[in-house]
Amino acid sequence: MAANEVEERDWASLPPEVLNLIAKRLNEISHFVRFRAVCPSWRASTPVTDLTPQFPWILDNRKHPYDPNLSFYSLPFNKIYTINAPSSLNRTLSGPSHGYMFTLSEHHQAVSLVNPLSNHDIPLPAYQLDGNPHWIGPQQTRMGEYVVCYGHLGYQRPKLVFCHPGQNNWHELELSLDYANCHHFYLRGVLFSIERSTGATKVTNIADGTLDYVIPPVEGHLGEGTEYLIEDSRGDILRVPRHNPRFINGLDVYRLDVATKNDLPCWVKVNNIGSQALFINRDGGFALRSSHLSGIKENCIYFLKKTYMGVHIKPSFGVERIDIETGARKRLPCPLKEPISWLVPNFCHLSTQ
Image (cartoon, rainbow, N blue to C red; front, side, top):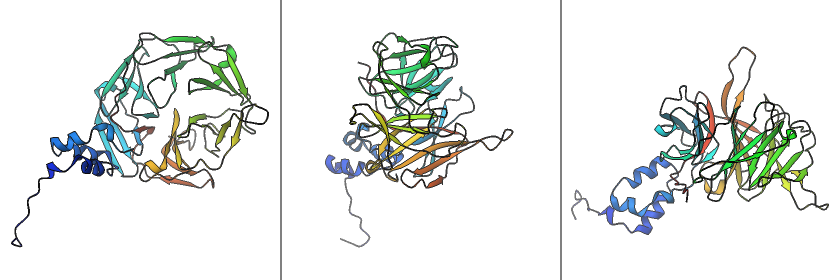
């Protein structure tokens, strides 16, 4: 063969198993999309469900809800993505989320789940909830789990409303007045309510509203600041209380221990959560295995931080990584003006059947 001759290869005829191996090494979603766009055979060999686990993106707060474009920042690849998501028009988005985000219309009458990447919209039954509705979980929407919305109706008894995608109505559960001043979380089919006054945790059966048991408070934490309850990748429930509602003076991690000597569940402080990391923002958090992600540091908390510098000074926003064992902190670069939520990008399609 002459030196200037180039051997022609039929790249479209690569075996599917080889294409699949290549696709699984694409840790950046834009590379995966371009790979599938090469030709029909490459696209057929790599369905969107085979997307390699992605490092969570950071959603920027848009100035106007009628803007269909959403901006996301990829921390490990230092890229900003602008995605046209018309299904998010005139809606506020809540998270963090694995794919689907919980959205509310301006007057809280239209509720839906939206995947901003696939633009798949799952409308939920209309429901008028006064006050300030707040999605309390689950953070990762899976089949068989309920989508939950909590609303505090003024000075009346708090109300919990929930439904499953595909159902035609919301189920309501009125709680007693002593649930009003609590942080609420819905995990593993159970309602956890942390009292702000005492720091104790009530565990409630949402089927009938009965109190199953009460977990004693964590020493030094009364629940007056922001609290986070997260189900980690191993199935444990972790509690991350903030010492101060305006500043992060410390972030401790506690694991729910249900197998104690006295058979009374309690919170146990931990310094190591293994090969996983926590991603937390204002609305909650989730855990991911570090072994599945490129660029993640294990046993750390990635926190979307809002810092108040003074009464007449606008707060600053950023990303901070906190080592759970040593407490070491590192400010990570983030070009977004107001990062508000984590989103694990994927093209998952949540079935409502």
